[in-house]
Length: 432
Image (cartoon, rainbow, N blue to C red; front, side, top):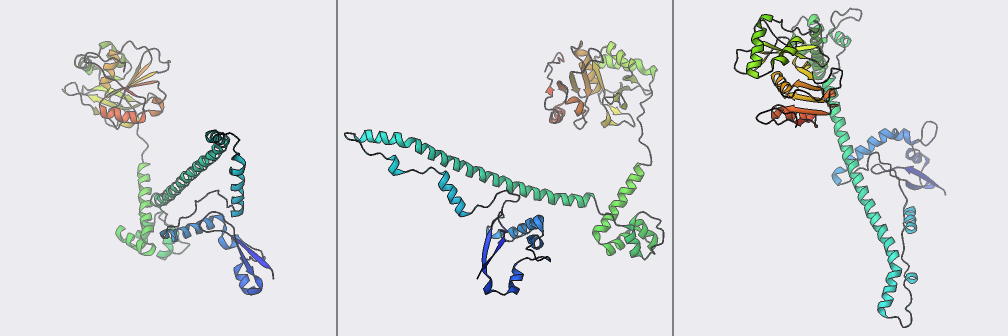
């Protein structure tokens, strides 16, 4: 009689060795052939039975789900833990642990030695040994706590991974619908293979061949291919038509309002008298074509990108009592800002940025803080929804905000180092 050992693995835990002894003289060769996964070469082939590492992991997942209601949890997925036999475990415990030998460490009492003296001598002898044992116990407790924390973190990570994979599959289905092949639609419509298709869209093809309306084409597609592929055809048609319409015209370039020199004196007076902006500053910006008057007498504040490209224009009417502005037709509000830089030369690096609520407020602060000690950028943020040149401002050493609270909150979410300027009643000092 001889014995054959079968080697397998646990489906619910980590890698474990399970050995089963079979007495071959008690079973027939036919039964033995079914027990051992033998491949076509007559070799023991575990991969042929379980399908490799990935399929084995999926099989472990399914077993774990099946017995979860019994309070049995699956082993940690992806764990590198290895199995240790009981014999090796107890051998390691006995070897590494500090054992207290009573006969060795408890000394005999000396002649004429009092009980207290003997007690102190025993304490001196045993104290180092107990310190080692206490250290081992503390270290063991720490390792168990650490192991529990790692297992909990791993399980949470695995749960999060599964949720993300599930959500990703949903997003893939909704964002990238499977296109319905025209050849498949043509086949279902009864068209010959050699017939040239005059449509690149499934819905249009159905409407042409069946001589039907859009609604009837959708019903036909849903009946032949199901609602999911019908909706995919609708989405693809909408995307294709939207792109076609959007690309029919090239991107328009902003055209600023035409200047009107005859209305400039009225605008200049409006800025000086109503908003207390010095005439010298107004003249400088007028020469740089950042401020001028249009043919309707409005004050034009030109908005630009940081590269200097005109992107829009703010229009203020001198005849209105409020400080509200309107945008000139064609302005790309999110592409640029009204901004100007003051202090030192244009070749000097900008060290400070002042974010304000309007172009007029930018001019007021520019005037009140002259002369500037360093190169300073004044930039108008006209709304809490206004975009910011974040890549440029993140590297700015100093950022100061002077605007309503809700806009400051929006700015500080993206630029935490931005400081709020709180002026007193008589001046607009730049020191925060």
